[in-house]
Image (tube, rainbow, N blue to C red; front, side, top):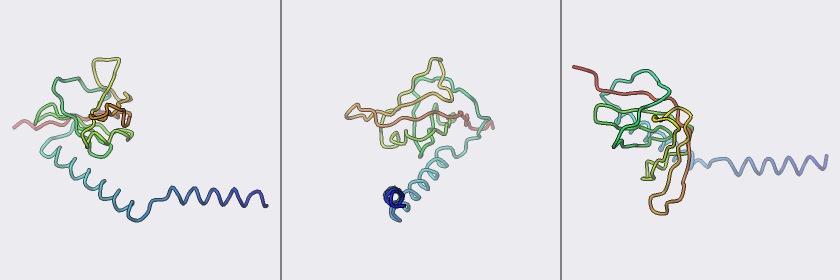
Amino acid sequence: MAIRTPLALATLLLAAACAQTPQQRLAAEQDSAAAASGLQKELAGLTPGQPMACMPRFNNTQVKAFGSTLVYSVSRTLKYRTDTSGGCERVARGDILVTQSPMSQACQGDIATTVDQGSRMMSGSCSLGPFVRYERPAR
């Protein structure tokens, strides 16, 4: 029994160290709400299509992050959304998104990395999810 007590105590201490404080939880909830609100504004007025495995590559595409969701803006009337596995959120702070794909398209399952603009150091990575095309409906 003496052997299990220190192990149990260590497990409890480790779990307590990983628990968020109320302030951290509140900040995370506020960040999540801000990301959801920003995403809603970004896609306002656009109609979503069906999820696709791949997205064509376009020149001059701007990428924005809203939490773990990335939005590729081709134009004001055409955007693609992908929900990632998380880890590329620093795009929202100005980090560069780098994707490599063996195909001429960005596809679900591709790994993207983020790079800090100043230091050129890798700052994160994520796996891309299915792509949803958003476009302005025809009048």
